[in-house]
Length: 72
Image (cartoon, rainbow, N blue to C red; front, side):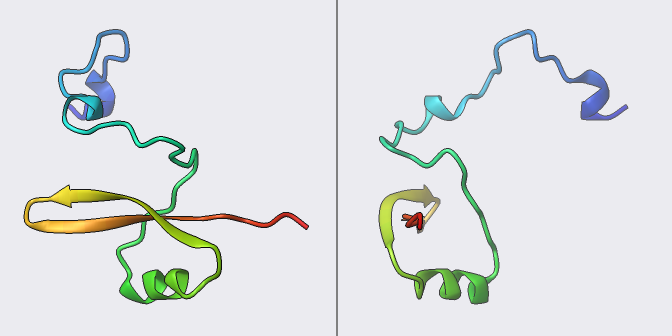
């Protein structure tokens, strides 16, 4: 048996992100997560990058960045 066989989308979840963190105003609808330092460094070198929040994970603080795209 796997989680896909027993998943129940009708009842409220026991653990919700809102139970432990506050909502970040203007948080992007679409996000990209990478565990690659090389890709992260390339992203930070781009234009229009701003830090919008932080994720506190144990003793680590992980910055959350937003890139504003300019439409032509």
